[in-house]
Image (cartoon, rainbow, N blue to C red; front, top):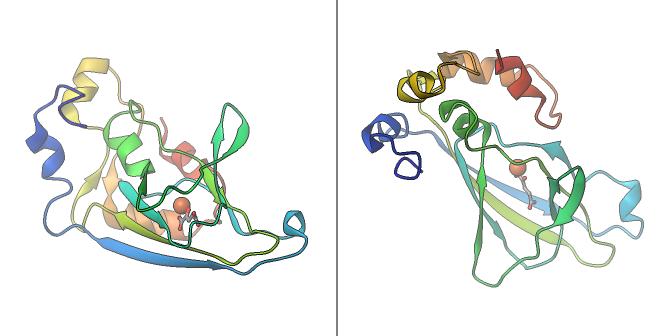
Length: 169
Ligand SMILES: O=C(O)CCC(=O)C(=O)O
Ligand SMILES: [Fe+2]
């Protein structure tokens, strides 16, 4: 990403260095004969940096919002889905957009997914990279400590990409 953005990779690397907070979540969606009547995983964007997701038993259920429509991400055997999270949108000053997505349940089959979320560790600052602010001549997001960022996040309900609007200037 740093190379594509033509910035010094060190600038990005030092945010996501060895002490990054890595979280793993396993999601289990039991089957439901009326899938449209239940909530699987509410629409959200991952608040983290990059997410690596495995659709374990290759049952469809992950959907992304594209041009206002929900589009299914079909599981590919032995393949990961890589999602851009809010931290990357903020750090890149809006160049890489985080993706809104949700998990829906299947009428017949159970579904299992495992996500690995790569965060900036504690003691870092979540905010647009200085080189990109200079290039864009504007900072589109405010900056705050990772602690403050997560405190704000966990005091809210999961709701689309709404937390990014809190960060937006
Ligand atoms: O079950 C899925 O495919 C999506 C999981 C997800 O979005 C998450 O755990 O944040
Ligand atoms: Fe997610």
